[in-house]
Amino acid sequence: MRRAHILATPADTQELGKELAGLLRPGDLLVLVGPLGAGKTALTQGIGAGLGVREPVTSPTFVIARVHRAARMPLVHVDAYRLGSVADVDDLDLDVTVADSVTVVEWGQGLVEQLADEHLEVRLDRREDDVRTALLVPHGPGWEERLER
Image 1 (spheres, rainbow, N blue to C red):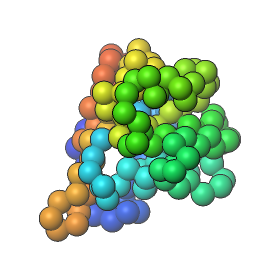
Image 2 (image 1 turned 90 degrees about the vertical axis):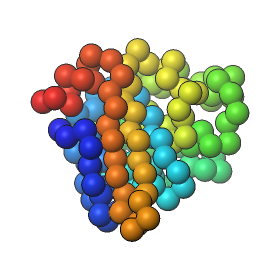
Image 3 (image 1 turned 30 degrees about the vertical axis):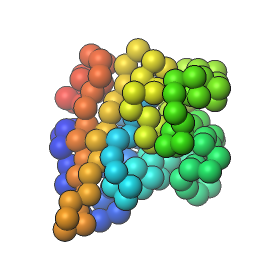
């Protein structure tokens, strides 16, 4: 899988999420980084579709975290925007679900990396022409290997 992606439409962003879902295993942590409107929720929607989530995947901004049951494994979708510290993350008890689920955290950089030995950072951006870009940054040899396949 390429590490840099040009995402001209929200559907392209969702398609990248579906591709990523094919690589995911229980215990995986994805940290989504990028400004408002960069496509973090659209990417998570694609991941959910790829995992077989049947209900809508929407931004968990006000509830902080949502668990979606999926055909392959649960998807835990977290919005850490309003969390100020690692202690706030600890209060969510994500460590209880992380081993059996795929955990996707928007705005989680610097707050959630300790939840897993390895993680995939997805850096999303929105260019001036409204095209989104995604850069996949593996943290750990397992992710390096999976992305090279």
